[in-house]
Length: 164
Image 1 (tube, rainbow, N blue to C red):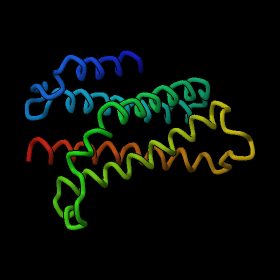
Image 2: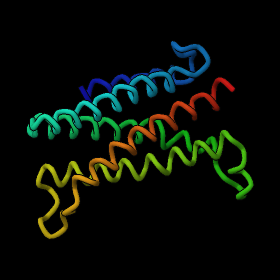
Image 3: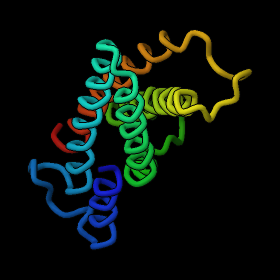
C-alpha cells in the first residue's frame, strides 16, 4: 500500500502533471493527491488506535508502521519541497495567514512525524532498551492528537493556498 501510494505521487511528479488541475478543482493535482492520502493516513492512524484499544497489538503494530512510513514518504515527496513557497525573509512574514498557518502546520507535523517514527521504531524493537520511552502510551495518545491537529492544519493550509 505504501509503495503504491508513493509511486502514485512520484508518478505525478515525474510525468510533469504535479501542477496540472487537481480533481477537487482549485488546487494542483499533487496537492489533491496529498490531501486524499493524508485523509486516509489520519483515518488509518485512528483505526490503529482502535486496534490497540481492542487488544489486537500485532495488527496495531503493522497498521501504525504502515501509516508512519506513508507519512514520511509524503513529507519527503510533497510537503518538504512546498515550504520554499512560503520562505520567511522576516518575522513579519508569519503574520500573513498563508505563511503563518503553513509554518504552524509544518512545525506540528514535524513533531508528530518524529514522535510517530520514534514510537514505530520502539514498537518494532529497533530502539535499544535503554533509550525506550517508559511513558509510551501517553506518547502514542499525544501523537494521535498530533496527527489529527496536523490533518486539520493541512486542510487549513490547502484552503489558504488554493481557495481563499
